[in-house]
Length: 115
Image (cartoon, rainbow, N blue to C red; front, side):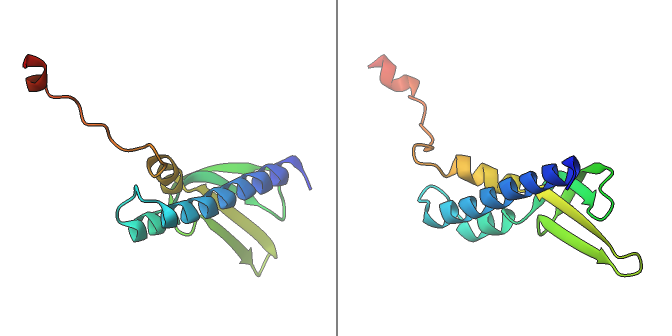
């Protein structure tokens, strides 16, 4: 296993852990409205890495939208395996937005200062 495969593997473990953690967090959070939409959005990947796993001589930076965030493809003629892994940005936003204490604090009105 070379360095590119190790980077891809570590990135994959981090992304999958983040997404599973976000799904549980979304399910039990009281701060998030429209929980099904947050869960569906957590399956989308927006930027990430790609690699030809069979000949790992290069790793590619990917930009775009991909669902599911992990895709593995086998090319039967050449017997090569390619993998694309995208970062689930919505899952990261849900973790930050849905945390306890993330309530919006309303600004004090200037009318109360005049009394």
